[in-house]
Length: 178
Image (cartoon, rainbow, N blue to C red; front, top):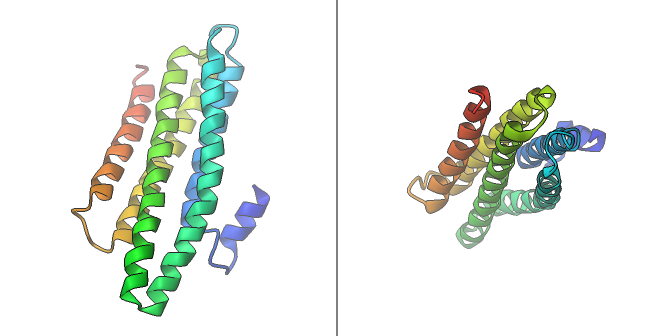
């Protein structure tokens, strides 16, 4: 984590916003895993949530590397001014950002589900997890729009908004005790 923080704060191109958002979602998944692990006494099936959170964590860290690579390729294409390169690289960066939004929304939904079953002493953990995941989903959606360069009708933009909506609904579900 310290390495990531120093890297994000550095003058280097990467890691940047996508990696930071993926790390936030991974922290959310870790909080869900913690709440589930510490709730086995009241939730014997907590192992499913633990396994899901670990799978999501693995996907997020792999995606962080892909986000960095597609970001660098997109910036290089923009710097080159080559329309073919731009046309190839920016859609990939948008696709990677969309995957971030969707995985983060999955983490938020898992947090909400865990919040319904876990020991309520850990409700704050899953609530924070859902908020972190929502922020990561929003960040992914924002990066989708940045990489689409004002093509607001693109399907990825709509899919990213849906992912943010799923994450927000999970946050609200936890806030209402539902």
